[in-house]
Image (cartoon, rainbow, N blue to C red; front, top):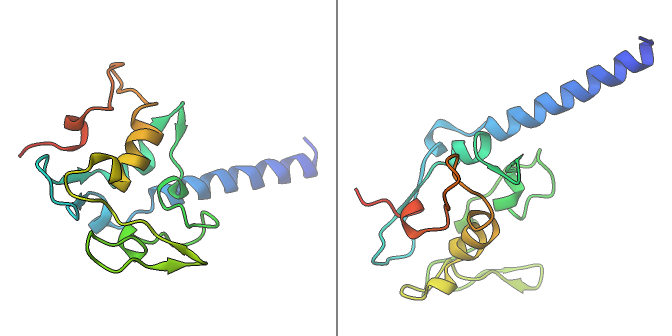
Length: 145
């Protein structure tokens, strides 16, 4: 193997390793997040943040951070929380680069909930559980305690 080929191989391996570390580098206090900003009859959602970043796949691929943290320009950037841009119903909406960030959701209107628009429509309707069953059901995320 030439020095050039070896160098490129090591560089690619380092890059792939660093991308995996970034996805798995979720602070312990963010490993599971409770999404409870929108009151509703289904209750809050325990979001397994670490599992979404490391274990879960869509179309056989890992889910990059910027799938959900859509304002990230690169994987090296620190992700922001939803609330850094999106507000609860009734709060003054924030403006970014001439655009208004939608509210997190309107209680009682499932179609207005950002999590439903992004998570349900973008991933949960496409992906399947390991046993092949749909994960696009209310009970998948809204688990009664």
